[in-house]
Image 1 (cartoon, rainbow, N blue to C red):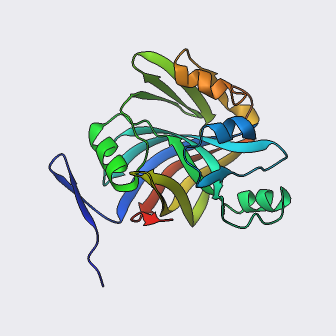
Image 2: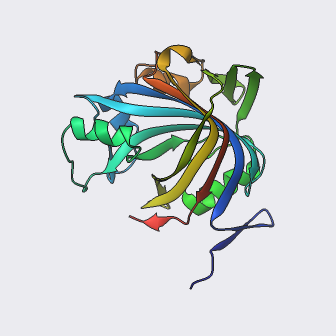
Length: 245
């Protein structure tokens, strides 16, 4: 068996697979314009999945990492549901909706701001994640979690989600796509959770600020009510090494 890949950033080693032992995470999934979403994807390898004619999916997630091989930090993820352009399309619309329901569609992360430099360097250097260091603050109430993202002193967005849940989410294998030095890659990872809650979109509140990225999100039709939102009080996961597509 080959040895596990080992990387070094800022004088610290990172050995794969990378383990997330405890985190709190929430997400809101939005139906957005496919043409505008497609314009935000770099390169020609990936394309958005149209869940309805002319409509794609954007996942906006907020993660409070507490025990992670890359440290204790906050993160915001803005990702589109995508497929490889050369992959079979399957049943139009209905097939995509079925795969979304089963969690079998992959994502492309368009932006992954974090609030710590080490995880930025490691995430970008290992997997090609588009991480930048920004201001990310969480505020917790008993039944609600709110995350505010600012970049360069300007407000990008604030997402507030219902918090809480009693279900256990079993480990599920997922895929996210990136580019590493211009070469398309995919990363397989598993994720599961305790304290899982699922709700309709009415409980989520998204506010956009005056940052240029907020204006880019407005081209997708945001802010508006999401299709659904989730909360995971105690999330865990494992990230494997990236693979060339």
